[in-house]
Image (cartoon, rainbow, N blue to C red; front, side, top):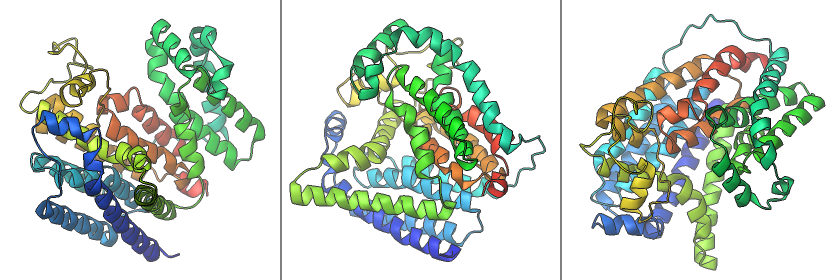
Length: 424
């Protein structure tokens, strides 16, 4: 397929996905259990608002036309489609579902899209050295072997091999949470499991190193046993699923897959009267984040906390008795034990109002602009898909430190740069 054919296919499939998700959203997602307490606590009603939906549809069409007729790299095109999927479409459908949803949330999500469009035009000139691709995996593997030593010491007593059979998982997690409080392991766990090891696997697959693959997979299993968190395999799964093909074909396949998921959700609902499939997939992954964004905007409106729950805690007193995620769970979802995490748009607003969101949009746009300039092989597309999940579920500070955004930047600069040409 040609470049134009792929873009036309993505255009059509994304519109189809939007139509299916819209139907699911207005037919039953807005009546889901997570929406009911929000409607009750805000004394509002979730319903179909035709005027707003028309506006959202026109904006989406405009965005699609812009990226289809703009000169942008395949990587940049794929990123912009992901922004539409993860940010613009969910925020738009929520805006069209309740009159109390302010237009500024939809506007800021679109501003993220246009900001990234602008910064993708910048070609950053980077002159730093790059590791030889044949040696890069070995160097990263050595770093992992050294870095895993504290994990062996701290988690060794709690390793339970039955977790490999999904037995005693919650028991292991409880023991680990109760007995291990270590900053190093807390920060680096995601670095190794979701970024470094998946990158290593791509190199070993490319160079067909069986020994390297076995050792890497052994490390992944060990990190899984350090708390029995199945999410340790997210980076690896994303990398392996999206190992083949170029950016445009992968984007086309992803959007097509979302369409299939949406259609399956419709079939399960109307043939088997079973809503759980769509609730577990499209609702939980996309629409719930948009709903939580609204909750954060509503609660912290004119009441920002200026990062007092994170790196500014030593200078600014945090004004609440529980964390923001639990606070939103208590105030809007009637469950203080729920971790109602949200992403860069709402977290920016929580910390410094519109200014905080603009700061996050700027930083994310510049980051993705650098990624575009690095000319990274599409074999690593899975890392950026996973990055979108992070951007919709974590603060920017959390993304940089705990979830490894800074580590990803360093690896892309010194290891993955120009692999678009050298790792075909």
